Amino acid sequence: MLGSTAIIFLILAFFVIILVVKGFNIVKHSETMVIERLGKYHRTLPSGINIIWPIFEQARAIDMRYVTNTLDGRMMVRFTQRKRIDLREQVFDFPKQNVITKDNVTTTINALLYYQIVDPFKAVYEIDNLPLAIEKLAQTTLRNVIGELELDETLTSRDTINSKLRIVLDDATNKWGVKVNRVELQDITPPDSVRYSMEQQMQAERERRAQVTKANGDKEAAVLTSEGQKIAEINKAEAEKQKRILEAQGIAEAKILQAKAEAEAIAKVAEAIKDANMSPAQYLLADKYIATLRDIASGQGNKTVYLPYEATTALSSIGSLKDIFEHK
Image (tube, rainbow, N blue to C red; front, side, top):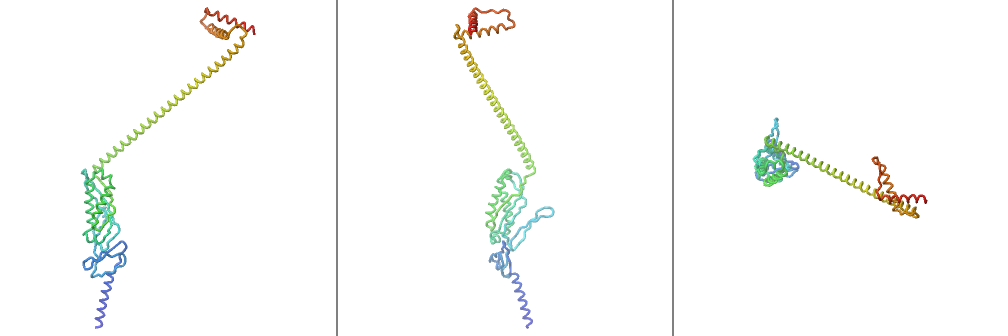
């Protein structure tokens, strides 16, 4: 009888130990667990040590998505269930999707989505398969957004597409307790024929820009050359002007000096002949007349010199000069 009681006690102790071990849970930081009691939601466990009743309380599992690469480089998506819900930001790598743009060009797009579970209760009870729902919603939203844009806009408006996708996905997944933080388009791959046409267009555009740049350079060079020639001509004209001004000033000053010298000479002559019967005008006339006769007589072809009738006046002046010298 005593042995049977001991066995029962041991069995009860064994079950108690199992219950304690099963009911003792340590929840890590940034994780949580949704606990159901007899199939009904009871509470959400915080991080730290938590005790549950294994028979009456159980953790509700949630679907999780994992992406692995095969040996041949292909991406393989697997779905599993976990009782611990990760509250950290997670990366959702979409497989490549074929979308059609507004101008009917089929384009392959690969995108990344960063989301975070902010309400574990909604993530568990508001949607059956949360990762699959997010993937399908992102695919349809991506098709709708790209369908409103032409190919050129799609290639040059990544930020706009990312913003639109994030707004639509965040609003739709709010009911599931999910916050979509960012959406990033990785690759946008148009068909080979379109890529070839784009490359040809880009090459033509580069050649056009090179020609425009060369033409602008030639234009600026011609303008600078003409400006330089203009400045050189202006400087040359200015130098010629200054030269002529200086020459004119020199001639004027020479004439002034010559006039002053002649005036002084006339004054001295007048002083010298004031006692003779001869005026300074007659003296100057005779002097000029003699110089002119000297020039006429010095000519090589002149054999005979004829004096005009009016020369008698000059000769009389010469005679007066003789009297002046004799008087002196």
